[in-house]
Amino acid sequence: MVAAPTGDVAAKRTLERAFPALQAAGVRWCLLRDEAPTAGEVDLLVHPLDRSLAVATLSRLGFALVPSWGRGDHMFLRAYDPAHDEWCVLDLVSELAFGQHQELAAPFALLCLHRRQLHSGWPRLHDDDAFWCLLLHCLLDKQGQLGRHQQRLSALARECVTQGPWPDLLRSLRGAPSPEELSTLTGRWEDVQRKAAAHRLHRAWMRAQGPRALRRRATNGLLLHCTKILTATHRRGVTVALLGPDGAGKSSLAEHLVVNLPLPVRQVYAGHYGRRSARRLPGGTATLLRIGSQVLTSTMTPWHTVRGRITVFDRYAYDALLPCTSRSPKTKARRWLLARTAARPDLVVVLDAPGPLLYSRCGEHSPDALEKQRQGYLSLAGRLPHAQVVDASESVDEVRANVTQLVWRAYCSGWSSSCRI
Image (cartoon, rainbow, N blue to C red; front, side, top):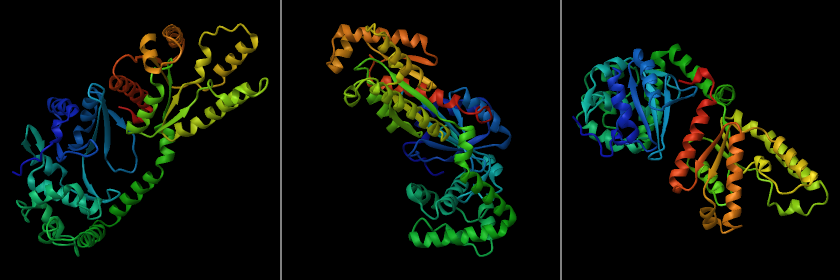
């Protein structure tokens, strides 16, 4: 057997819990491609009768079924490990289908599961199956690009045989390259030659499968093009408001979520105070300007939500609900309007830290003043729906991990019941 590459997928912490759970539940599965993934995605081949059991087992470990369309029978499950700030995606399939729209099906899924072998404690494809599955993936799914799979293919090719179900299938395709010809693709062939061979193979396979392949390509292609419409009805995004006193780290946290979440995120500054241009305006013009800006933000937010995006608000209109020392009816009326003309976010995260620590971070106001701000936000968190208090006195990485977990849970809860586990 060809040795598994270094950096094996089983070394990922989340998978160290997922794989034993699948084994204990009696799920018939194996790794489909066992190189270390570059984007944290692991491909599993699961017996068709065990798909529901596999999904239910993984859901108990924190995996969520991510709605997707136009991907054939692919099921994507994503999990987040806040203890190590790791994301993991499992791609479950029960059939072996190739092509950009999974239009070319090979009837060997059950055979591959029957011939699977244990290596490093986990079931993997037999070397022959692994070679042909990976090669056809590169030829038909990636248009002849071997990419990061070239080293693995070269190792498998040295022990590959050109007899068996896969070579027999390829020989039955009129006009396709022979198995002997394809088995040398990882060595002396240039990219142009591989692309030409991939085109010949795709055309011959499409011709052999006829209407079935055309129907699969049309169906999956249509669903893929309708992703935006289906997302609006099944995979809606969420809105998250970050609140907290000065120095709590709202802006840096919002920027981190935009950069590091493997999800579509938009950052919006929704604060009202500290805008010097508004302060110079006469009378109630500044208040009207703030309310108009707030209404505009609330109007645009649903656009991001129906696109399945996460909208992160750096500050929010809820700041107007904080205790105010002014007794002016005008000030109270302005704050009342500002607090109630904003749309209600799906999640409110209140960053909490002691006043002296906040002062050491921002150097503004005084520790006592910042402590008063802190108490005001804690009181506000008790009155707001969907509010969560996060200890911002912890390390930056811990705060980011805790907030990321809250956002991920809120994001999953926004999906329709037909798309959730």
